[in-house]
Amino acid sequence: MAANREIPKRIIIAVGGNAIHPAGIKGTSEEQVAIAGDTARALLPLLELDNELIITHGNGPAVGKVLMRQALAREKVVPMSLDICVASTQGVTAYILMQAFENALREVGNPRHVVGLVSQVEVDANDPGFSNPTKPVGYFYTEEQAKGLAEQMGWTMQEDAGRGWRMVVASPMPNHVCDISLVEALASRGTVVISGGGGGVPVVRDSRGVRNGVEAVIDKDLTTAHMANVLGIEEIMILTAVSKVAINFGKPDQRELDEVPVSEVRKYLDEGHFPAGSMGPKIEAAIRFVDGGGKRAVIAHLDEALPALRGETGTHIVPDA
Image (cartoon, rainbow, N blue to C red; front, side, top):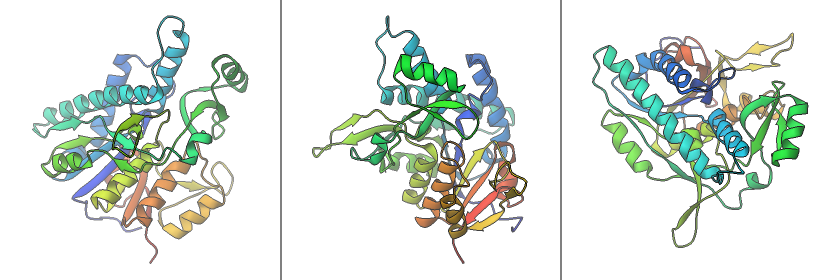
C-alpha cells in the first residue's frame, strides 16, 4: 500500500453511530456530548484542512433507543413513525457533532464553520428491502430477551454477527439525496457539512412530486457512497472501530486487507466474509462507490483518520488495474 498519499481536496467521511452512542453507555446527554468531543478531537486534523469536507453519521443506536422509549410509553404517548424517529435522531446527532467540531476548531484558533442539515433521501416504494428487514438498530440482547421483545413489541429480531440479538427494520436503497445542491454549495465555501445522517430520512415521491416519509432506516454508508458519486467526489472514508477490514475474521487464518482491487473485495463479499450486520454494508458501499466512478474507498479506525488518508493504515478499496 502506498504511504504518503496526497490528501484529497474533496472528501466525504462516514462516522459510525457509535461515535455518539457506543455500546455500554447509559446514553445520557453528558455522555453523548463527551463522546462527540472525543470524536471531534480525533477528526480535528481533517477539520483543519483547507478542503471540501462532508460528514455523514450513523444513528442506529439512537433510533433503537427512541423506539424502546416509545414502546415503554406507548400507553400514554402516541408513538412516532420511523421516518420521524430518524429525523429526530438525525437532528440531535448533527447538533451534538456540530457543536463538538466547532468547539474543537475554536480551541486551536480556527474560525471554520460547521453546519448540520436534516436530509431527506428518496427511496423506491417497491424496494425489496421493505419486505425483508435487515438493518440492525438499537441495543444488543440475549436470545431469550430478543424472543420476549418479539412477542411483546412485535419487533423483528435477528442475531447480529455473533454479538447478540438486535431489532432489524426495512432498509431500502438510497436513490436521491434531496437538496444535494445545497450540500455542495456549502461545502464549496469551506463549511464543514454534516448531512445524510442515519442514511437520511427515508421518503418516497409520487408522480406529482409530493414526498411522504416511510417506515425504514437507510444505511448511512450506502447514502455516503451515493452522495459522493453524484457530487463527483473521488475518495470516501468510512470510519469504524477497527483499523482494517479482515477476511476469516476471528479464525486462525484471519488476514487483514491493505490495498485491494474492487473485484477481489466483491469476491470476499460473495463468499460471506462480511456479515450483514457489521462490515457487510461498509464493503457494499465501497464497491458501489468504486463501481460508480470513485477512485478510493478507505475503511479505517476513527482515531486513525489522517494516517489512513495518507495511506499509512486502513483498508483501501480501489478500481481494478
